[in-house]
Length: 494
Image 1 (cartoon, rainbow, N blue to C red):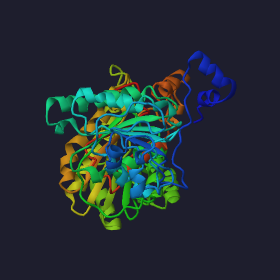
Image 2: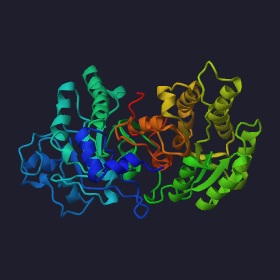
Image 3: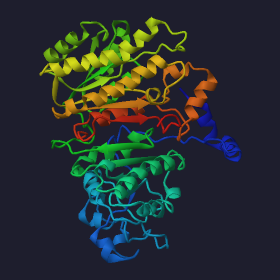
Image 4: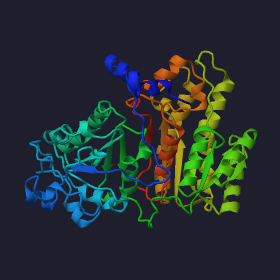
C-alpha cells in the first residue's frame, strides 16, 4: 500500500513543511537489488580495533589512514583501514581517537573479504560505521563510542548502518566488564532513535570462539536486506563448521517448507527463499488452493493443501516431506489468524481458533518433525513467526498476544534440542507491516502504527522474509533460541 505521507514529505513543498513543523520525514529505505542480491554497500569505517599499522603509524598520513586504491579484501586493504584505538579520524581533522582496542575488527575484515566492500577511514559519506567494543572492560571505556561515532554519525549516508560489536555479558570475567557489556544495549537502542534518515543501529554480541560464525549476520545487518531491523541485539555463538556458501544463492540445494504461504508475508517468504536458491513447499488450507498454486508456480515449488490444526496434520506433513523430498532443511511456521476482541466479549471459539492455529499447530508439527529421523535433515533451520504484540501486548488481542508469546517460548524450549542435532530455531517478530490486513485499518490507527517507530514508516512483507532467509541460511548456525524484531525499532515493547 502506498504511504502517501512519506511521498508528500520526501520532496518539494511537503518536505519543507514537515521540516518547518518538526514532523517525521520517513526516508525511502534502500532494499535488496535483485541484480546484486549479495551486495554489502561501502565504504565502511571501522573503529575500535587495533592493527599493527595503526599502532605504529600514528597519524592521518600514515598507513592507518587508508587508501581507496588498495584492493578490497586484500591484506594491504585491511592494513589501510581505520582500525580504531590510537588513530584519529583519518581525514586531517583533530577529531578524538576511538578508545579501547577490540578483538573483532580483523574478524570483520575476514568475514567480508569476499564481498568487495572497502574499509576507508576517511570516507566522507560512509555506508556503515562499525565499532568494535569487544575489549571494553569497564564503564570508563564506553566513552570510545561517543568519540568514534559522535563526529561521524551525521556523515552517514541515507539508509546507512551503524553496527556495534561486543561480547556477551554472561561471559564477562568480572562485574565491571559485565555492566560495560550490558550498557551497550542502551546505547544502541537510544542511538537508533536519534540517527534518522532511514539509518539503523544494531548490536552484534559474539561469543568467544564464534568469530568465524559472524559472516552471515554481518552481511545481513550491513546490507539493504535489514532495512527494517533496528535497535536489535543479536547473539552469535560457535557453530559447526560448514561448507562454502554461495553468497548470492545461500539456500541452493536446500528444501524449505512455508506454512500460510498463499498470501501476504507467507508469499513473500516463499519468494525470497526461492530467490536465495531454495526449493519451496508452499502450504496453506484447501480454501486457499488457487492463490497457493499461483505462489508455488511463481517460485517454482510445490503446493500442499493441509489444515495444520487437523489431528492428522503432523502425520500427513511428515509423510509428504519424507516421501517426496527425503526430508526438509528449513521449516517456517508462518500461518496465523486474528480474532480480535476484548476479553470480556471474546467467545471460546475466537480464543481456541487463534491458539490452535498460531501456537498449538506449530508445537505439534515441530514435535512430529523432530520425532521422525528422516523428516529434518542435518543442520535444519526452523523459523517461527511471532509478533511485536507477543512481546508488548495489545488491547483487544489477548488471544493473539498469548499465542505469539507462546511461539517465543516454543523457540526457547526447542533451542537446546535442535542444537544437539546441529540445527537452530529462532523467531521473527514483525511490527507494523504493510499488508492487506493493515490496509483495512482505520486511517488514524494505521498512521499511528506507521509512525510509532524509529524509521517513521511501516515495513514491507519482504522485510520479514529477508530476516527469515538470513536465519535459514546454512552459515547462520551460531544463532539460535532468539527472537529478532522486524519493526523499525518500534516504540512499543522491550
